[in-house]
Each structure stands twice: as structure tokens, then as C-alpha cells.
Amino acid sequence: MSDVTIAAPREEDVHRAGRFVFWAGIALLVLWVLVPIWFLFVNALSAPSEVTSFPKRFWPSFDLASLQFFWNFQGVTAALWNSVKVAVLTMVLSIGMGAPAGYALTRFDFPGKEFFRILVIMTRAFPLPLLALPLAVMFIRTGLDDTVLGLALVHTMLALPFAVLITFSLFSGIPVELEEAAWTLGCNRLQAVIKVVLPLALPGIMASAVFAFVISWNEVFAAAVLTIENRTLTAFLLQSLNVSPLPLKFAGGVALVMPALIFIFAVRKYLFAMWGIANR
Image 1 (cartoon, rainbow, N blue to C red):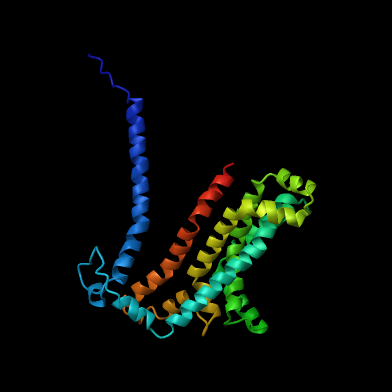
Image 2: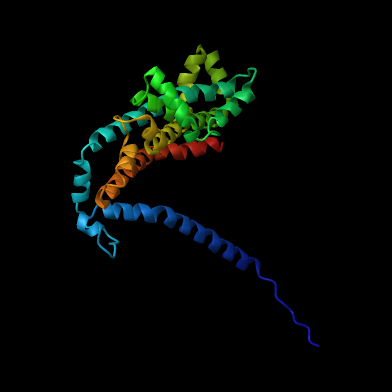
């Protein structure tokens, strides 16, 4: 009987196969995210007759009839303005409460500190549909139902854990010795925070603002349950989804996607800087 020798795979071939699998996975993930967005823009920038035709176009005809129809649709302008107000207010409230909380968790030791961190995370443990009915009853009693402020408070509740955790990680990466040096030069704690800590933590704060804005802009359940006349754009489109023509749906999808994309690209340098600070 002859011996059969099986050659072991070379290490170079294993690395090459691993790189191929890695880049193939990245390519599939990118296509999974970008292809729906691409066809959304293609249909929104095509004539209404082309949106309903088959086969679908791969390149837009750059006909603005669908977007004009969407913009002139009754109630769209008011809903879009409500979305902007709620998202901006959510961003301000999330940063205004989340950044001081993140700083306090980093710099101070107090009883119940770890329990407080758990409570911050547990605010996302309860699904929003479970809280919708109690929130609606409380808002009716307090006069916050169907208001921009009431909806912004709910969205702040959703975005606040991210703001606290992100700013906590950023403040943890800033040495306390920098603040102590500012104290020795005549600054009090508040002045040291404003002049030393905040400029270094600005990337993380901007990242928290981005998350808060996007969370509020895309949220639909609370907006649909807690508002009637002051609906945001997501709730307005959900309300008219069954009776809307396809051009309105695609144009509405672009109206929802574009502000978040523009906002993220506008602050991308702060996002990249945040990773640099976090990795120090």
C-alpha cells in the first residue's frame, strides 16, 4: 500500500482566504445599506410615470415632479417643520442633561453611582409601546399632549442614555490633571470645565448631538400616538401611507433620509476626532 501525503495549506493562502472573506463581507454589508438608499433616490428623482413603470430605472431621470408633488401636498410643510423643532429641542435637552451627567459620573464619587449608571441604561429596557398609554394619560393631564415639547421630552428619554454613556467615555479619556493644572492657574471648577474639558470633549458632544437628532428625526411610534394635529413628518407619512401614491412615498422617504445624512456629513470630522480621543 502506498502512503498518501496531504499537503497542509500554506499560511499565505490562509491569510489570502481570510482577507477575501473579510472584504467580501464588507462589500455585502455596504450593498445591503446603500442599494435601498440608491433606489430610493432614483425613484424620488424620476417622473411619477417612471416610478410606477416596470422594469425600474437604475439611473434617475432628474425629474423633480415627484418632489414638487410631495412639497405641495397639504400638511407636509407643517409636519416637516414640526420634525425640525422636535429634533432640535431633543438634541438640546439630551446634551444639556447628558453631558453634565457624564461629567459627574467621571469626576465625582457619590453613593449609588453604579446604581445610577444602571438606571440610565435601564431606561431603554422598557419598550416604548408599553409606555405609550401611561405617557398619553399623563400628557393629557398635564397639557403636554399634542405638543412639540411633550414629544421632545419623550424623544429625549430615548436619546439620553446614549448622550450620558458617550460623554462619560469621553470625559473618562480626558486626564483630571489638566483640570487640576487649570485650578492652580486661578480657574474654579466651572471655568476649568469650560476652558479645558469642553474643547477636548467637543467631538463626543457633537456625536451625542448627532445620535439625539437622528433618533428624534426617525422616531414614529410616539409621534403617532401622542400627537394629532402637530404630527412630525414620520407620523404624517405613516398616517397617509395606505392612501398615498408611490411618488409621494419615495419623495417622503428622501425627505426623511436627507437631513440625517447632511447632519452626519456636516459633523463627520467631530465623529472621527471622537474615535481619536476615545482611543488615547
